[in-house]
Image (cartoon, rainbow, N blue to C red; front, top):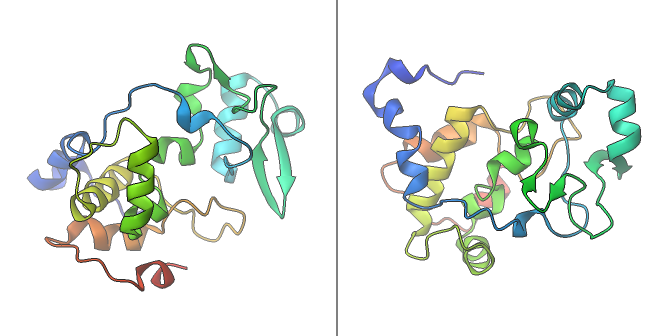
Length: 187
């Protein structure tokens, strides 16, 4: 990955948390952990979670995942929430999948103002005053600093993540006008 070191330039140091905090602060409500079947895992997610849980990759997959249309995803618990969602939050928070680490900076929310509007309506952590351009830029920077992007050459990756080169385009723009074809560009 070509993510620069934070010390390479003063502007990257500002990316660490200031940008994302201006548009999103997690309220720990757990709403993003509810619902069936959206946590698609890439290989590094599976490896990180298996290690965290002290399981072999095979045992982790057998106990906590299912394969649907060629992609491996976390199963849901009895309540319909993520299997790792507990009354106290995420029981694997330190090792959670990249798609969870990325919330609310998903592909749709970074490329489509109407998707962001829906996310704002459902997530109390997204600041109501956050405009689309500012949100997209802050989100891209947040993801780049943390190395959260669509893994190259991995066909069963979460569709919610964007390729690194596209995140760089968003992160470095001074203005980000909405372009109706943006979603098509990243597919």
